[in-house]
Length: 260
Image 1 (cartoon, rainbow, N blue to C red):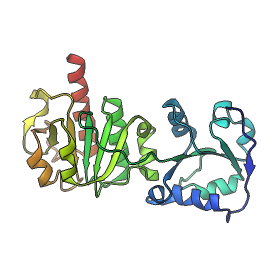
Image 2 (image 1 turned 90 degrees about the horizontal axis):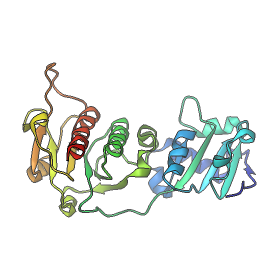
Image 3 (image 1 turned 30 degrees about the horizontal axis):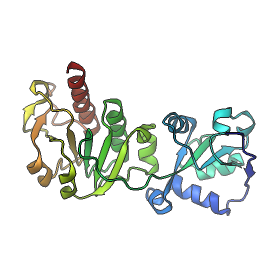
Image 4 (image 1 turned 90 degrees about the vertical axis):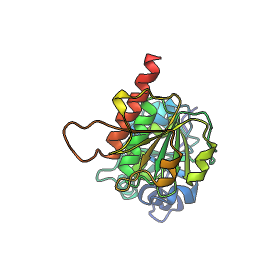
């Protein structure tokens, strides 16, 4: 794609600038607008690496003359903002020099046979983003987020996901009964009940169910599960954080694939 002649915008009252500020600073703005803001070259390059095309590329004025060609040519529309205005858009303590606006994919349905991670009311955005990273790293391709889980396309989840979003099928706003569409067995994590993970032969593909930070997995999904597992903690702590538990469990599934 050739370099697009940029549009220079200097007004805080410009409609696009207002939209960018909402996308960067308000968790629900992505769903309202049907698009998301990716701030920083790491997220932007992760998007391009997965073969996606942004709708708009936005650059700070001081960075634009030196912007790498692949980023400068990435979008059909390019916008340049004064550095101070770029900082006003950002929700970060130190704003990035560039970002992309992307259209959100249309709401997908659950794939019955996909290796899946189910998020049952996981509320902390950092935890959700970290779990998405682990899911993508360990061969899971689908996220099924129940209502009450942090919004998957919110700015904090996007930053914590570090590009994992673009390698995953993301389905959110589900009810427990919606998981009946999954043909793979549900594996539920628990702090105190179930088989020891390190002694268990795990099914593949499967759907790992990870629960609320304080309450754990809800009763409807516990009852539906084909397998209940817990992680050995010889150090004696009461429980692991959900993101740490997810990484351990999903890695165990990845090891099962390799051994098979």
